[in-house]
Image: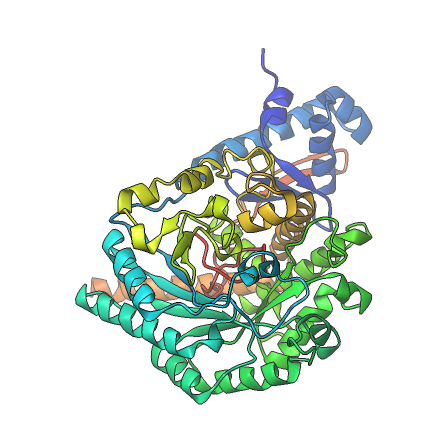
Length: 494
Length: 45
């Protein structure tokens, strides 16, 4: 006979300690607050204790423990109905292409110390994507897919080739118009060292959202992101970010790549978030560890992985800021954008089933017309899907590279499928390739960092539900809605 | 916030499990969802 203890042990749940103990259900992102006694009882049973043994430890009756397990199972089983995960997305001929990326060139005016492109992209002769190739790429992709939702520019450094950016925006807009569709959204990842009036005009006309790479204050940024003559880049970038802000096309976005240099400078992740909020006025920042091999001296994990704790601390501060913003308050300092994504998922209970955009919601065309799932694979022929000159829609989308990516879904991947954070995580196949040599093999350091962030986000979310101000805010919103509803009814009945 | 809970009290011990739902808080602005690897921000899901 299956006992209630056995039934509970079979449930996939994770228990977290904290000011408010939490039970988390990875499959449907269920979050439950527990009392200390409840948490202890559940933990003892998970560890193999019978209800009698747990009761003895806790100082209560076995009936109480069994009854509580019964209540818990009722709630969890009722909540199973909330599991509504979509199938992982794949690219289909005739379907939408969420993101088409143009690697418009393969050269850069900086030589960032951690950049993975030194080993592949930058080994080729410098090339800017020719206009006829760009035109062919837009036309081909527009033939294969019903709509291109977003076009992203990356390099090399895309801002060094402003003509081709303008050309692609014009061509893509014209094709969308011909199809009776809105133009794609445009965005660009830039090192921010070049922002000419010509580029500013293109950015303003096509509302190109720019994410600037800034690694923190000059003390670290100018050690990592230098020109070829070793001159620093921070001051120029800071001025260009201001020029971009004045165009008012989209909020400034910052991405920061963390290396051992940050640790040497004693700059914690939290202090970076404070800095980005203060210096650039951003509410969110993208802070990620550099995709480096485990033995790279720039890998911050070299020092024993203590940086997971730094990320956890920054995640806790981010949750607090974001919960305050969700109550309409202004806060100081930026939040980690990954924490924002995780909180949004917990709140909506819509888990992320995608491993990452590479090849599932995104295709990349490099400056030679080669097609890859992500710019992080550019130059590695193992992951080349084809070339724009010889694309055959169905065959291209059935390429072994894409089939390999589809087979490596979170549900199939041996590391992901048993990870409690799988539906909160955004993984990165490019990072896997660099860190472990295979897209299917997760980097333990990467996963530990994501789990540290996820745990803090889950616990912070649960703790917020016990916060008197949060409760008051929600109750007042409900009252308002009830009043509005009753007002509408009264009007309707007259 | 909906808090479905079950509480059992026994010998001064409180066994409680409470489902958390902060769905009524304001929405966080839908923006770009990051991938966490290379440091580049890209749309996911």
